[in-house]
Image (cartoon, rainbow, N blue to C red; front, side, top):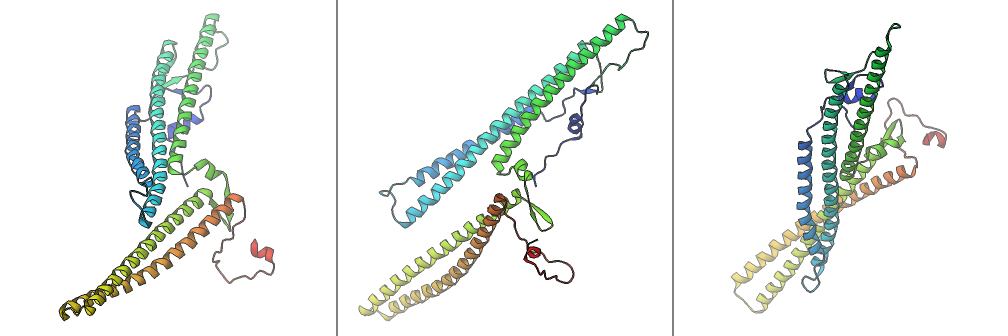
Length: 335
């Protein structure tokens, strides 16, 4: 679950009402620090651009330069990596721009608070403890017209400061929302959308965000398991080829009536390759079993996510405390 933590001062400002003291102290992070961080993110995106170009050049290698099954596999993988790295590059660029834009907003916010304080002082309002205090709420009944006019002018000055403070706050909050959106896009997590719809499962609630992360993790594990199985399969094929070549060489030596020492040495190579091939076949069977299991789990997680997004109910089996109860009606069984 993604949480956005707000400091106590910000929480108090959410309850700011006309007539309350107006805070005019800048307590957020320095804009220069935020700006330098945004620059570093954009520099990282520029470095990833090199990887994007490298993957693109690899994926577009012509058959005249590099041909065969290995070349096709390399081009396919480079194409996938090119898409992934290009997405990361674009997200980092957007994130860097959002961070730099946020630093500009913070800079304007700090300058606006300074100008707000100067405005309050110039209009004769009381500024104490980094707050602009409102005028008195009422006037005595025997107040003169001059006192009434001054009291009204003070309240108009307070109203101008209050409206300026509200505009500064709203501008900063809008920039904060844009920054959160860029962060969510880069991380692949959308807190507002994930929190908007909950899927009941038994007595608990499962958020879309959790289902997405679970499906992504299972898919990644399935891909890694498939890669391991593919690597083991390539190892078996290579050892089988080397064993056949060694057997062919041994046959040539026997037919040529080569010295017995040379024949025995070649026979030893054949036996070694045969043992390595047997071990590789065992590893291949194990990795294929793991790959099948991981693929099944990834498919199940993808179905759960698809059912949740479509609004279909999910049945979750949980061990209950106490003796088991056998429902007699199918509707009871499904809840």
